[in-house]
Length: 526
Image (cartoon, rainbow, N blue to C red; front, side):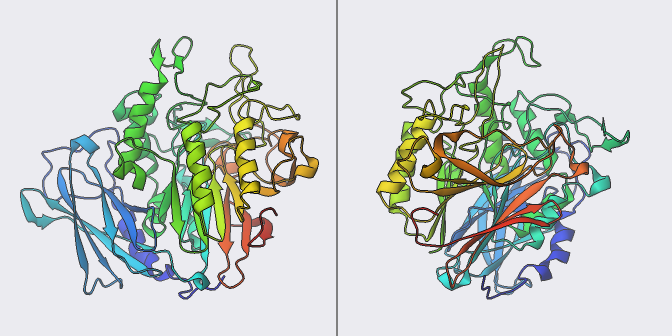
C-alpha cells in the first residue's frame, strides 16, 4: 500500500501514552462525586469514531459535570487550533459525551485534544487529553488499511497486567491502521470476572477486578460499569487515542445468544421473568454512551446498522444481526421473512450495496454465515447464527442470506468481502456455488478473527448449503483456552491505492501473520 505519511502515528505515541495513562478512579462502580475539588478530569481517555473524509466523532468521560471542548489542529503543537464547543456532561449520560467534528480536510492527520471545563466557570479547565486520527482520503492512491476483531473480556478472562493487559491492542496499533472495526461482544455483560482463574499448568490467571464485574449486568449502571471496566486497561486507552473505531454489537452486550422477545430467569442468575428486550434497551443506552457512533448519536431509534464510507476504495456495511432477528430455534422452516437481519435491514443492505461505487464493499457481520453455532436449550437443537448444519437447500435464516447473495450476483455488485468474529478462533472460508446446494450466487470470501481477550474455542463445523471451503483455520483443541495461552487473533485488511488489490492478513495477538490472501478488484465473485 502506498502511504503519503509512513509511520504517521509513531511520533505521537509518547504523548498519547501519557494522556491515556492518566490515573483512574479506584471505585470503578461509583458515579463521579460532586464534591470533588479541583478541575474536571478525563480519567478514561478519549476515542474517535466513524471517521469519514471530512468528519469524525470524538468521545470523552468526565469525573464530574463539565462542558466538553474539543480543539483540532494539523500539528501536534496545536498551532492555529480550531475549537469545537461540545455538550454538557452530566449524570444523564454517565458523564460521557460526543462531539461531532465536520469540515475536516480529507486524507490528513487530525490532532485533537479534549478539555473539560467547569460549567460554572469556563476558565477552569482540566488537563487536556490528546488523540489523533486520519480522515479518509478522496484520492484513491493513498490506499486504506484497517484491522478487525471482536470478543473482549469473555469467559472470566479480564485485564491481566502480568501479561500486558489487553496486549493485542499494542500489536494492532503497530500495524498503523486507519480504523478498527470491532465485530461485536465489546463487553460480556453476562459474565463475572473473578480475581483469579486456574490455568492448566496449575498457575493462576490474575484479573484486575471491579464491583461491576462481580455479578451479571441487569441495571443501566451495571451495563455502564462493564464498559468502564475495559477502559481500565492502558493498552486499550492508548489504542483508542491513536486509532478511530467502527463499532457494532452482538449478544454479550446483553446476554449470551439473546434474541428479541426472550424471557429468562428460572435457573439463571437473573431475576425470574427477566425480559431481555428491557435489558437490551439499557445496554443500548450504555453502548451509545461509551462509543462514538454516528447513527446512535443522530437518530432517535438508536439504529446501529449503517454504511461507513472510507473514500473511493472502501464502503463498510456495518450490520446488526441481533436486534431484528427471529427467535433461536431448530431453524429448519421453509419460509422465513424475518431471518437474522429483519426485512427492513435486508432491503436497506440490498439497496445500499447497489448504490455503492466503492471498489470494495466489506460486509461487517457480527455472526458467521456457514459456521454452525449451536444454542441448545432444554434438549432442543436450537441454533444461534445462520447455519444449522443441514447441507441441503436453504432453510430458516439461510433463506434470507440466499436472497442477499442472489441480489449481489444478479445486480453484478463487485468487490464484496465478509468479515466477522464471534466464534473465538480465526479462519478463512471460500464460498463457491460449484460446491453448494444453493447455486444462484457468485463466489465470495468470509474471514473470521477474534477473540481479542476471551476464551478461545475449537473450530466450528461447516454447513455445506453455500459451499464453504475452509482454506485456513487456527483454533485450540480444548475449550475456553485463556489469553495467557495464546489463540487471540485479529485481522488486517490492506487495500493498495495503485492496483486496488485487497490483501487480508490473519494475525496472532503479537502481530505474527498466520495467513494471507490477496483479492483482485472489479469482480463479482472471487
